[in-house]
Structures are given as structure tokens and as C-alpha cells.
Image (cartoon, rainbow, N blue to C red; front, side, top):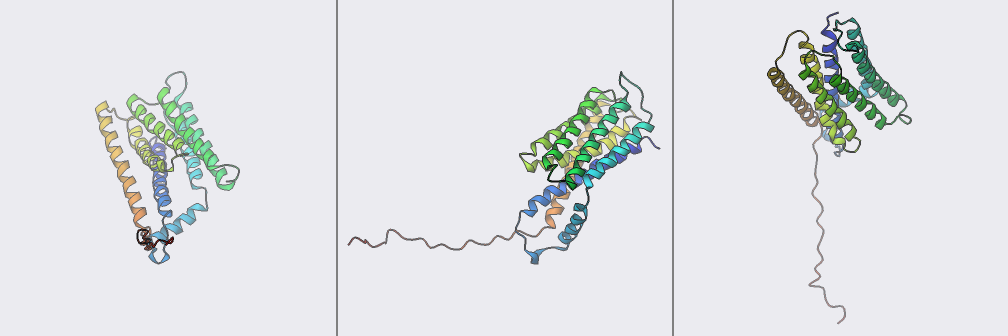
Length: 253
């Protein structure tokens, strides 16, 4: 197996999560609009069919478990150099197992929503991102410390955003954008710096372009989702007659 293939697959899975969360954010706000069946577009009907198909299966939990399996396979078969007191393979395996735990909570929430709440799902996901950033900041995993620090910043920001979503749901858009950045960073930079050296100024420039790409993808998905939604029809309020108290006859006369 190519040593770079697991990182590419994991990056693509994170990218899929980011795209899904961008769509869910836009769909949530669109669903608040009053719907007029006569103005439903073909694109919206197709989206609704896909949503019904996806909602019938625990997609997020399954993707996390698949990412865990791919990551563990790549870690076991990959040629990571032994550095420090703890093997990088053990550190990476720990990160993947935390995401497996988050995927298990997702599956339990799908089949037993009364027992496993949505808050527990967000807590498990935030915990997984936090542990990933924590171990990347302290473990000797990569050969470029700057790349690892940027990845730590990305995943810690994502973890904080997920926690804040418990009181501010609109932050899901930032979670989606950071996850797109996360997936692109793993699939590109984390994969490349093991085979070729990258100077700090090069890393900074690449990070800037990754931020621009994640923002552009987020913008396109949200705009496309809302464009397929029915238009908001605002009816004019009825006219309310104003009683003229000044012209009221004096009832006492």
C-alpha cells in the first residue's frame, strides 16, 4: 500500500464532512422559510430525495469508522520513524480510536436518539478534535513542527466551535469551513512534508491558499443550497384603520 494513500483518503473523508456540514447549515436556515409548493424547484426536489436517502442511514458515524479503519491500516503498514519515548504509531492509533468513539456515539444517536442525545454527539466529536490537536502539539509525529502546529490550530478551533454550537447553532458554518481546511491540509501538506522539505515561508503561503480554497468551497455550497430553495414570499400587512381620538365627540355633552 502506498504510504500516502491513507492520508489522502482521510483528508477526503474530512472534506466530505465539511461539505455535508455546509449543506446542513444552509438547509437549516432555508427550512425556517415558509414553503410554497407551487414554487418548489427541481433542484430542491432532488435535494429532498437525497436527504431522505441519507437520513435513513448513520452516514456520519459510518464515515468516522471508515476513516478509523483506513487510518489504522495506514499507521500499521506505514514506515513511520521511531522518535521519542512513545512510538508515533501509538499516538496516531490513539487519535483514530477517539474518532472511532465519536462514530460509535453517532451510530447510537441514530438508532437510540432518546437515550443518546445530540449534545453527547457534539461532545464526543469536540473531544476527538481536541485530542488530535493535543497529541499533534506534544507528540513527535511529523518532521515539520510548523505543519503540525497549524494542524493543531485548525483542530482546536474546530473543537471549540463544536462546543459553542450547543448555545449558538449558526457556528456550524465555521465548523464546516474549518473541517474543509482540515481535510485539505491532511491530504496535501501532511502528506507531502514527509517526502520533501518545506520552508516556513512556503508553509505559510500554502496555508493561506488552503484557507482561501476552504472559504470558496463553503461559499459555493451555501449559495447553491439556498439558490435551490423556494423564494421567501413576503405578503404586505393588512391596513389597520387608525382611530382619530382628536375628532371623537365629547360623550359627556
